[in-house]
Length: 458
Image (tube, rainbow, N blue to C red):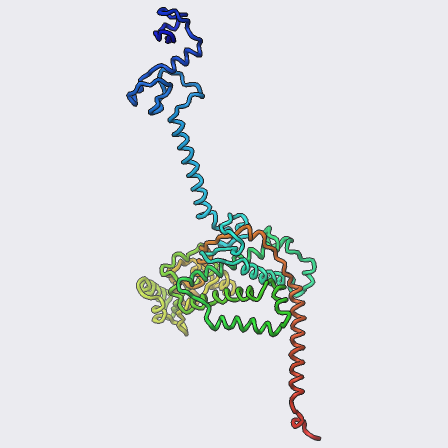
């Protein structure tokens, strides 16, 4: 069917002209447009529509041929546009969330969850500016402090590299490969070492934050006394030696010493108050194949038969389920001294010296935190062990769980320039001058004294 434009009569599609008014049948494309523009009834909206699509819901005219890509529903375009806009917003939000929550943390892929050089340089910048190079558990590591630590570590690195032959440093270049099983250069290895040292120091300091642990006044005074003593010893060469050692100023040196004093203050508090740092459950400290463990030990001699001694040990183990193990040691242990402090067991150390104690060592290394062993037979008696958590476990766990954010661009730009040979030679020179000054001063004082009475007359 086609619709006559002139009289609007419905005409058979085979008719060449309108039988009513004689109007000729329109061209094919005109027929298509006429049919598409014919009025139709939308069943969903209950409306009469005169377009290919319902203007209310966007439904297509069921009598039309919608193969053309040029025809697009108006409302559907708006819907598609809205969906695309929302998708873009969601993608941006996820990207920002991922950047600030996940990618900003430096992943640890080294042995014992240590940070490798590549871990840092492949991470995303999580810090802007150039004053701060790391944030560890929220604590800022200034770039100046990091440079100071790099300088100190670099001097030690070169000292160990040359040993007693300082001439080995004549051809030393920081950009050469370290030849230590990694792909790092000497400089990259130092940066990696210092990064892990920062994690160690600041993860411990962050534990002391809860208790506001700070260096004592005495410790701060000792820092000032040390600086004053070195200024006196080296005189005008003091600042020159500092710069050769990687410190740009006395204040930078003071910052370095103060951070170390803060770390020492936390360790000292841990020694005095270990219980407030050690998790009572202890399961967080359990690691697979630990290199060292700490155990409390109770020993029973074979005073009677071996079976009877083992039975006594098993009875003690049952008591240990409800009783304090230290109290059981004081009550039952048969050694000459009763030690209720944990002893360290290191993998392979005891068994290499006493092969007969291999089972004892293996049993100790297999224990989980707060777990009591079965009776362990030795040539002279039975041991009962209990593994406990100590501050060493706390510090290792803190390092493992530390959240490190890096200023990657600043990290990449750091160049190590210190030279141990120059520092060594300048230090010797300054020391010689200092000793000469002390000697001259002593002779002058001696000349001022009247020593004639001390020389006996012949």
